[in-house]
Amino acid sequence: MGSRAGRPPGGEHFPVLGTAMRRRNAPSKDSSMAGQRSSLLFGCAIAVSFFAGCIAGEKSLEYLGEAQVDHYKAVAAEIAYPHQHEPHPDAVRMTDAPRTVWDRNHDEVRDISLQEALQIALTNNSVIRSRAQFLSPANTIYTNSDLVPSIYDPAIQASGFLFFGRGLESALSAFDAQLATSMFWGRNEVPLNVPPAAGVPSAAVDETGAFSAALTKQFASGGLLSVAHTMNYLGTNAAGVMFPSSYTGTLRAEYRHPLWAGAGSEFTRIAGPIAQGFRGITGTDQGVVIARINQDLSLADFEASVRNLVKDVEDLYWELYLKYRVYDTAVTARNSALVTWREAKAKLDVGGVQGFRPADEAQARDRYFETRAAAESALADLYTTEIAFRRLLGMPVNDGTILRPSDEPVTAEFVPDWKICLVEALTRRVELRK
Image (cartoon, rainbow, N blue to C red):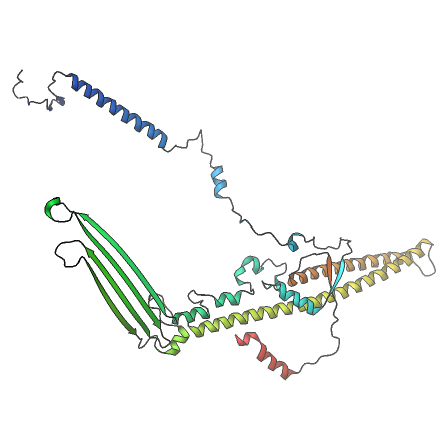
């Protein structure tokens, strides 16, 4: 049947008053089946995308009421403590509680000489302690451990390699010959839109390779000698070339010597060679002379720390000796006051004697308690000094024994000579050598 005039054939769309009208042909069986198949595929695609979105979609966190953030606050404010994989030494885990005046334990007395005390202190103190750190809230071991001297400080300085902290070996390494090599290889294939029978490859293949090696040597005069060798490779399957691969090599020798800044062996030995790769950094590097001076300063600081440790050990040794003498005097006074009080108490119990007053017994009793308090105070000072002495020696606070000095101080008169003392001070003083 013919179509109406003005209507394009084929059922094409055209708008009429905002609606799309199309000629409706009689649907055939094949077209209906194709439509059903398309509808089925479209529905399956929607279902798959819906279920995939439900499975892979991110779940939203919802609250019934106001959000509870206490859990997240606790997690954010949680403190992570390091785990110690190494067990504590037995001397630390098995130590007893510090002694007090209330203890009535009869610990074994260990007599120790000054020489033995110095030997124990120098053996146990890898981290050097000082007497002023004892019971001090400003103890540098807790507040700033980087400033605490140790036996490792000279080694740390000698093995340093960073800027303005280089050791001697690191400063000398600036004059070692250095070899640097590199190798690169690449391949690029680009398909060509040409017929197979045209005699032209179906793809343009380019291979590139680059090898370089350079040997540089820094001299103490400030000069820099370098010898470099480069080799470039190019392979191609392009038409019109004589050889499919080609090699290009270069050999370069170069010598640079500063004329003003950085010239001369004196400057290079003190400040080191001028770093060509760090031109943006102001100042100079550390040469061999500065590195050696820094190492000597580190050794001088370590020597001063050991000297102070020896002095503190000796001072505490004789102070502990004095505490024993003070305690012995206080115990003698307490025992004497106890005897006096007992005699006065016996006279009071029998009714008194001629010239005896009841106030004399009260005075004797008061004197006894006064001397007893002095003896206990002297014992507490003795325990405190003994603990501080143990700390300097690197010993446990209480190992079942109590230290007692066995050496006697020199009681003879000693008059030093001023000239000899002055020469010794100017010669041995570490601060002057620094």
